[in-house]
Image 1 (spheres, rainbow, N blue to C red):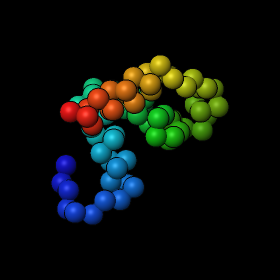
Image 2: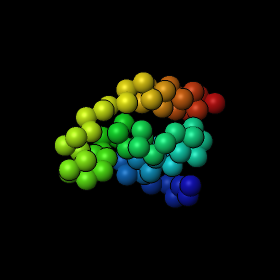
Image 3: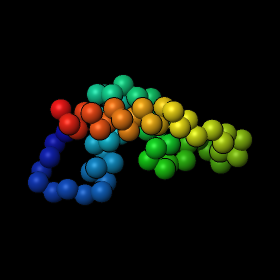
Length: 69
């Protein structure tokens, strides 16, 4: 990841999404749900009300440990 000295909210989201997949090996769907993005289209969203809280908690804990290293 190329850091050019400017930090933005979008940059943090980019870091979280990329590191979540590459470092923590978390599925992109879990990361998207944690980042409050809707997953899929409007029709799918009308039927899929799962929150995947256990997996999202593992993402947060794993990310916390990665930051402490």
